[in-house]
Figure 1 (cartoon, helix red, strand yellow):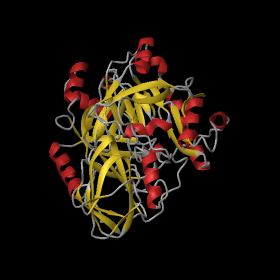
Figure 2: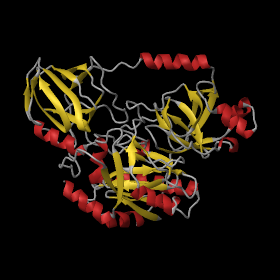
Figure 3: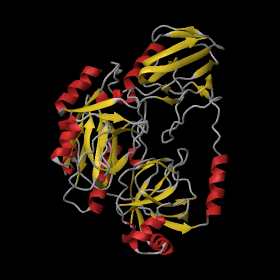
Figure 4: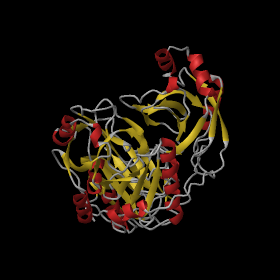
Length: 520
């Protein structure tokens, strides 16, 4: 086993001397053993093609102790009995826009490529990237194509995709760098189901062709069923949602092996301070507003607080001074104006807001939406950050450790990363901060066997432009990662507006741990 320390609270265990199938089995078995033990220091264990990403609380157990614990682990693989899952699939056309291009490159008709794909033996190796996203081995050689040099910003839900010898299905709409060959008429992830993922490691998947009309009928039914249940105890109604307002709490770890990311607020420090002022635990649910905040109608008396970047806040038209706490009466109107300095502000309410189920991405609020009080207390945090850091002007400097694929980059590329300025682009979101600037030179293709992504991972696709992954990042990814941001600097990602200058500076693990202590 080879262990790499990515940043404070994250390490990557790999099996470079084993064949991929054996390495994957070892990673899955070690993840299962850690999950069964449930040690207090463990936050998540995410197996992938050849590696196991371990996210942990370094205040409970140090890096060297976690490494020692992994090295002495006894692995006894006990795979579950395999199942056969049939997947109705519409190939090509609007559902699979890359099918004809791949077929042309392979010198085949699209119909022949479909026949090869559906007749292959597809086996689920592991779950990752997104809730219910299954990495399936068995794609025919003609479909073993590299990832796209630049990932798509939007891939439709249930798209069947191929890359690097794998087949995968995007359970929900998301960015993605694989090639799209079809779409399935099936729900890949249901938080209310047991298990929530349709596909599990070891399963055999069979792709059964259907016509576009059958897919359209399924998607129409799915759309009509998307009716959110009203909250049990509503505390506010959205009059105007603002530019991008979502309900967020602290990260919720423990489901990474099912492809469910921890998520949580982008600026945990601002969330913790707002909740503290409102009388809540640091990681209770609150509103995260970007660019311009919402107009709200309060449906109950409450205490509230506003932190993060500067935002003009008014109660019934009267300006409120400072972050709070402020008292809002039932029937009062709360308005949050344009956000200045940074990008995001946080609004916390006494009792905390109800969060969506794990594995369900929080959608932006819309006019008429109701938000309710939490029915359960928020989990206590691990080293909740307290010191708010909002950039006022100039560049944001992010301290970073060399990443797990540091040797994939030329010496010039490494120097560029740690010396050149980059700019945040408008395509940035909670999934990742997409940067523009000088290309970072690779010494080999960026594609890697999929592996877990630590908080603050900086991946560099083939086009050479870095993406700093945020809280809604893919759980696993297949692009080379040049660095990992120290945890103390992650809140700064939340406040980077489009056009903000970003610089990276080198750090050591010892410096990352010291910065973590200073931030809490």
